[in-house]
Image 1 (spheres, one colour):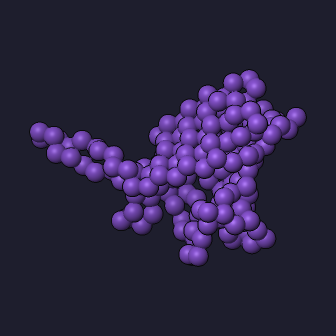
Image 2 (cartoon, rainbow, N blue to C red; image 1 turned 120 degrees about the horizontal axis):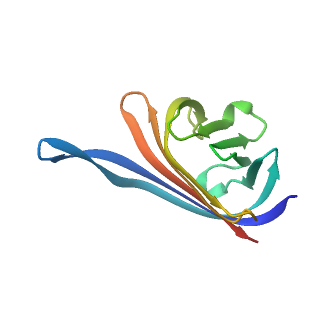
Length: 158
């Protein structure tokens, strides 16, 4: 059964710096970018998985984009559909301990192949589907760009 929900989606992107500590180095996270969106969506279950569906916000440059998040207990799959053009879509699977290659279309830019490594996934949705899903993952493309991301989706009654 589908039900309408309110969503609070927070995405934080960090640069990882190595800070000298005696004879070793410590990883230090420095926030680079942060985004918070409040929107309405739909929550439903199908084939032992939960789905969260919502339209992307115009103010983040994703006009006519629809996102579907699938939670199956061991991974999160995020699929974004941008209008009629399949090349503008994204399909990213986040599973702890697994390295995935994802094609990602950045608005107004050519598509990129990203290496995505998931550090941690926490699915704290209750039996009604309300609560929080949090995923900590690292994105890398080329040898010069690497960022740590923390995505949190809070699902609330509408």
